[in-house]
Amino acid sequence: MVMSGGRKRGSVWGHGVFWGLLVLVLALPAHADIFRWVDDDGTVHYSNTPQPEASQRERRVFDSRGLMREIIPAPPTLEEREQARAEQEQAQQDLEVARQARADRAARERQLRQAYENLDEIEELRARREAAIGADIARSETQEKTLLRERERIRQQRADSESATDRERFEVQLEDLEERIARERAYRQGQEDRLAAIQQRLDLDREDYQRLVLDGEG
Image (tube, rainbow, N blue to C red; front, side, top):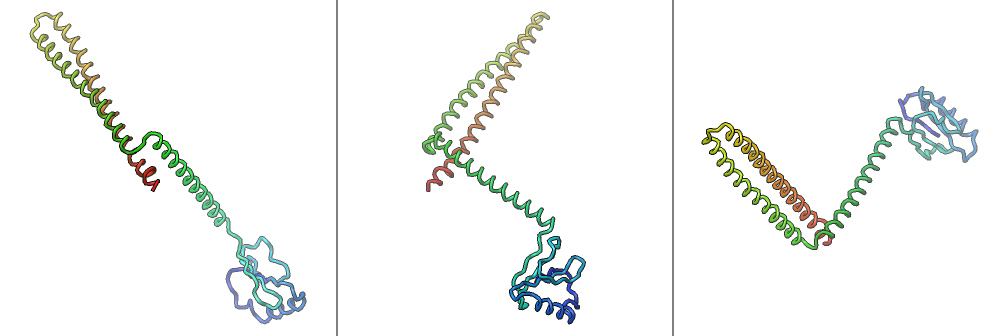
């Protein structure tokens, strides 16, 4: 017997229903199931066949002795089906993210093992890069000092000159010097930015090497 959920009515288990059910039980074979269900309009039905599939209510199945044998839950609503589908899609995305994370971790570990034998190599590489770039920066600073001195000399010559032609020539030289000084400063800034990026990458390499290679081995 199948019974759907919904508002209970006091007359459901009245005498008429009881005798109707009894007659139905007596008319059925001993092994038959009795289905009791309430449709969407609230009408109670008894049958030896399941309720129509269109009903969205819970069903209860009773045997011929009136004992409940099974509760068949109501089918999910459209909203529940959409939520279940969304949860399934999210779970699939989470699995893909986890799979990609494992692949990235393995690739990163291989990269570090190929690049370094130990942590000391990372620090040695850092020292070499700092020394090389530091030397370039120092040369640029020396060159700028030379250009600054030359600029001051030409400025003095321009100030002392009484010839308009000479002053015009000094102006051209000063413009050229200003451009060269600006290039030196831009070059140094680029080298300093490059050194900072290298240091940041090596810091990350050291951290990942410790985490993936050394700690991973433990």
